Length: 340
Image 1 (spheres, one colour):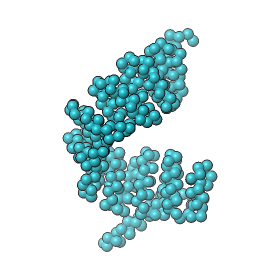
Image 2 (cartoon, rainbow, N blue to C red; image 1 turned 60 degrees about the vertical axis):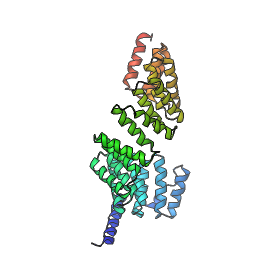
Image 3 (spheres, helix red, strand yellow; image 1 turned 60 degrees about the horizontal axis):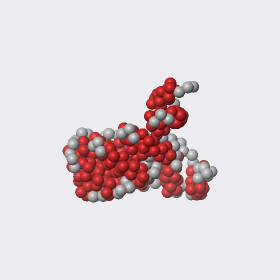
Image 4 (tube, rainbow, N blue to C red; image 1 turned 90 degrees about the horizontal axis):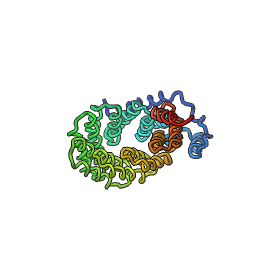
């Protein structure tokens, strides 16, 4: 059959698929213009007079996505695709929403349609591989990544994903080799250095620490690289260094309270209760909904004999999670030794 005709048929099938997806949507003229968000309302008003503008729907979908209104984002991206089913970026945006909405199979289907439109587009094959990896479709992921390396033999992202795929399928040697290839192609790829460090440490090789150092050296404010290095130091029984590195992660990003939290846990392990208490103070100050932060701050208070403060923190933890067993047990310990 004529290739041009084949492509035309593919486009027609895609258009029909999206028409089916959106057949129950409200007509474009019925969009709401009163959400309270100026950006969204401005686009909604524009759509009242320009209801066939696919890009306006895509823009509004991005705004809904940023507000985590995934249903509205999906509806708008489907409308955009109904109007322009050949736009690859629209497919990417819709698949991103599906992934964040825990609808991985719909994300995969969307990317498969994108691959039909342009099978030689490297980004599409990479996105396909990532989604296939999420769904543990390892053979499919390898096929997609092999296609990437055929199209772009020096693509570092492909080798990083190959490393993750090999790791999950138990082929450690090829996982290491692929991660090394990624770092050789892109010496600034911190994630590849982290994976290499973790793989080599699991094999008991002493040079593992060099790779965590390399990841941090690329960007000393990279909280994930700092946290990975701190985990390595902790597992190597180098606790003071681990505590300092965990703190560095949270100092690099005040909202990243996992560093303070892990530093607090290690200080508890070392019986440095007052120092641990200061770390847990920082956890709940920067994340007032951190349930475990309140529990462990309460536990530190309990160990210090400050039972009123311990009780208060256990109660806060239980307010957020009434069935939290550790907090229930802590509260029971305190009430058994203090007058009612």
